[in-house]
Amino acid sequence: MPMKPLRKLAIFLYRMWFYVLVVIPIFAMLPLLLISVLRKSWYPMFYRLAQFWARFILYGSGFFPQIKRMQHTVKGKSYMFIANHTSIVDIMLMLHCVRQPFVFVGKQELARFPLFGFLYRRTCILVDRNDVKSRRAVFENAQKKLKMGWGICIFPEGKVPDDYNLLIDTFKDGAFRLAIEHQIPIVPLVFYDNKKRFSYKSEFTSPGKMRVKVLPFIETKGMQADARRDLRDHCHVLIKEELIKEQQF
Image 1 (spheres, rainbow, N blue to C red):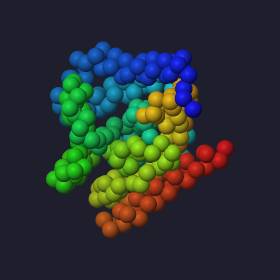
Image 2: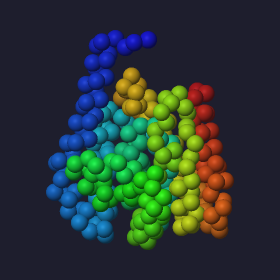
Image 3: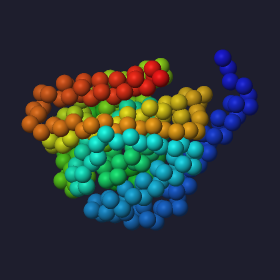
Image 4: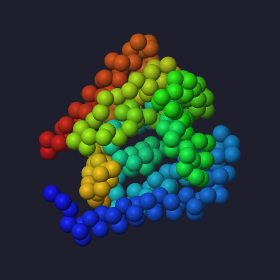
C-alpha cells in the first residue's frame, strides 16, 4: 500500500533531521576530535566524544535506549562485542551501550567520505572484504588495539541484509576467529527495535524506545581455531532466539 503524501513528507523531513544531527556535533567538536586522533594512546578521549555524538543523535531523533544487562564488563579487560545488524543506528546504539573503549571493524569504502573518512581511518580497523591481504591485516591491527586494553566490535552479518523480512542473516567467521585467537570473551548484544525505528527502507521510520539486551558473555579461553564455526553458530542461535521470542509478544 503506497504511503500518503503527508506521511511521505514527514518521514523525509524526519530522516533529513537525523542526518543533520549526525553532522552537527562533528563540526562542533572538530578541534577536539582532531586532537584526540593525533596519538593512538588518546583514543579513549576520542571514544568519549564519539559516545556524546551517538547520544546526541539518538536522543535528538527521539530514540530512547532501554538496556537490560545480564552481565557487566570489567574495566580494563578486552572483549569482542557483536550484535545483529539492521540499521545505521546500530553504530550509535553500540557506542551508547558499551562503557569502555572499543574499536569498530568496518568497511573500507566508508573512508572515502571527506572529514568523516579521516576520523574513520584514524580510529577504526578497516577491511576490504574482497582483498585477502586486507582481511589478514585486520588480525594484526586488532592485536595492537587489544594490547592497549581496548575492545573490538564487529557486526558478524557483515552488512545490513538486503531482505527486510529476514530476521537475521548468516554470520561470518571473523569476529569469532579473532576472539579465539586472542582468548577474549564475546559479548552478544541483541538490538530489538532498530529495524523499525530507522530502517534503510524509508517507510520504516519512527521515534520511540530502542530495547537492547546484553546476553551472558561467552568465554573463549582454551578454544582452538577450529572451534570458530561452532562458536559462530552458537552466537547466531542465541541472538536469533531472542529476536524470535520478542516477535511472539
